[in-house]
Image (cartoon, rainbow, N blue to C red):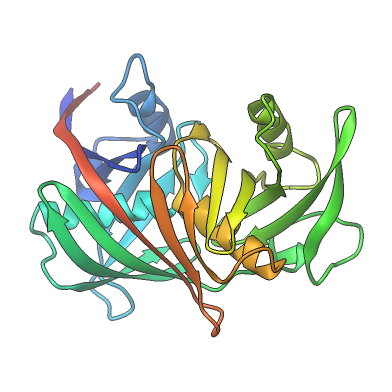
Length: 284
């Protein structure tokens, strides 16, 4: 029996358990460990874990793996990595203004903006979106340069979708109002055969050129109150289809993420990561 130190942070209610790789030396299966510790009734509870490792090379300062509550591994998480970076500042393991984080989807750059109590604010550069069907990935028979207004068949209906990879595959549905059954629709699309690696699903209601409202069904986690990945995907898809400007405020149930899809194709989000608590997990 051993104890594992952790801290739980959340980005607008999207909560992640941050642990360091060195503290998991006794864990033989990190995926089973994640399912146990993320359980809402018998564990700490979370939308995933952020697993940090200090790097010695010049490419990045730390690496961060994001593992979902169902034991699958994500390519990236905007909120999860922000929670990880906030952990490093909270623990004073990193005190510089800028930090480079290595993820499965590439190097991400974080700029520390401010601390307000136990709320840490960052500007994050997330890379460039991918639109081609084979890069999402999305099975369309033939390779499409972009997946926009594509009619996706689900139970009893077909829906126009726009899909993009922003570190994770995201399926975007533009709606006038949020269907009472959006969770059921999101769950079906997440595992749709045309998304071979599954997908995040975000429902987008355009308010005006600078504001959108979203609802989120995350791959491997289900409904979440916020998501950095889904927020930037919603912003990019809205700008790409010319429904909004390239800079928008993305309003989720947990809070508002400021998103910018720059003219050089780089994606940026601004948001906070708040400390919930730290503790010790008893691992047998």
